[in-house]
Amino acid sequence: MADVHGARGADGPGAGEDAPCADEGLSGAGRDVPPADPGAPGPGQGREYRMEELAGAAGITPRTLRFYRERGLIPPPRREGRIAWYGPHHLARLRTIAALLERGHTLNGIADLAAAFESGRDVGEVLGLGEPSEEEPVRLHPEQLADFFGDQATAENFAAAMDLGYLATDGEDLVHVSRRLLEVSASLVEEGVPLSAVLAAAREVRSHADALATLFATVLRTHTSGTDPARLRPLAKSVVEAELSMALDRRLRAAPGPVDS
Image 1 (tube, rainbow, N blue to C red):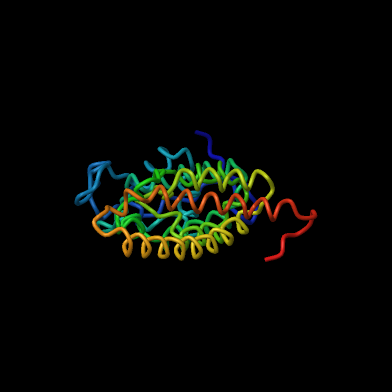
Image 2 (image 1 turned 120 degrees about the horizontal axis):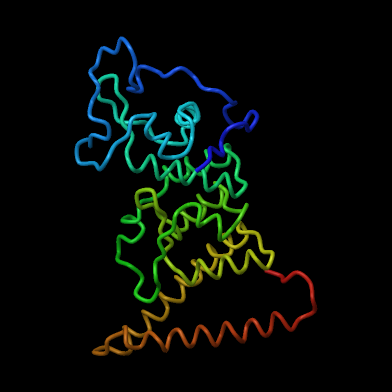
């Protein structure tokens, strides 16, 4: 893969190469530390790379890799004396950066996304009570999320989706809790609704859905003792769907214009 990160003005490193740094473990004269086996695995890890090897595997220059590390776009390497070792997760992150740059994202925007990614909730936390019984979680690479939402896949929207519990991190991947919600959100964005508005509406829908679920769970448990409430779940969903359909009829038949809240 070509180095797509070369001359990008103030947002990236310029052309040319820096001299190899001793602390990156590159081969050279006068090294105090004997060369380790290239790709030697660290404790509990898969293959590891020295800086020059990782840059070659990612299709970028060592100088670009160093720049990314200084900008916080990739996590720090593992240190073994003066040698820095990079793992498969670093390579995956570099490929994600390349894919996002090719989709028109800037390094500043990617840095914000990386910060949101690092601070996001783990999938185990989001799905701590078990996976949704009727929803299919979707595993995504960050660049696939950009394919769904284009330039609206911003750090702010990313953080909002994580806070809402729609997205969680799993290593270098993302997990969306519901394929249906992901596809509906993308469709609304295609229709011109900003993703920030979709997520804000989703938060309100969540609160109303929780209230409805509490109402139906109370009614069913109170009046259908001895019956598995899960068996009556489709009835509750049908009531909500019918009422929502009629409410939309009432709203959408009104005169055109903004809908009052």
